[in-house]
View 1 (cartoon, chains in turn green, blue):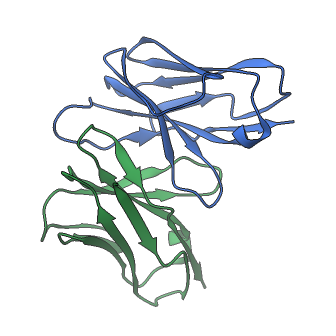
View 2 (cartoon, rainbow over the protein chains, first blue to last red):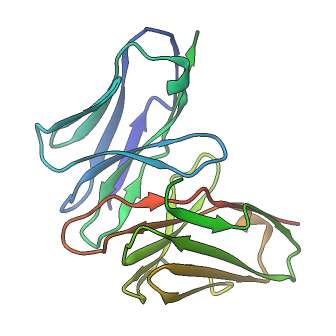
Length: 109
Length: 115
């Protein structure tokens, strides 16, 4: 069965304290690994797509990486405005997305 | 603005009511999706439409009835819902459901509460 697992469930950081979020996946015929950001009361906002192991993508303080079994979202020197829930999803062979439960990130000033 | 608009943003209804959720996308996409988001659970895919044709029904109870009149509009008709159906209902769109998965873009959802 296709599955995506994110850890930790919640993460509290001080402003400027870098860290990483983990996304482990078992998705048959993976067609893309997607990262989203979701703010309270909003829908998920697309951040990155990674298609092959070794691929990396960056946007401001965020960098996503991909291996054959997991993906990491590295957050460098986070700011309070980076506080949100980060969702990871694996692209299935039917064009569907299999989502993890998310990591809730809180960055304190 | 995400390019995907959902209305209403909030909906409270009794178990015997009939209501509809609406989604409209302005991105020129051909695929549209309904998801259910409940607390502490991953997003659950409900329905997929590609070029107005339903391509997936993820074992959703018949009290949820989707309608896709064209590639820009998607509806979810609701009737005789149960309290466990209270959740955030999200609409998304993508270029298509073709061989290469493309990003899905989400609306801000309808928060549904069943009394």
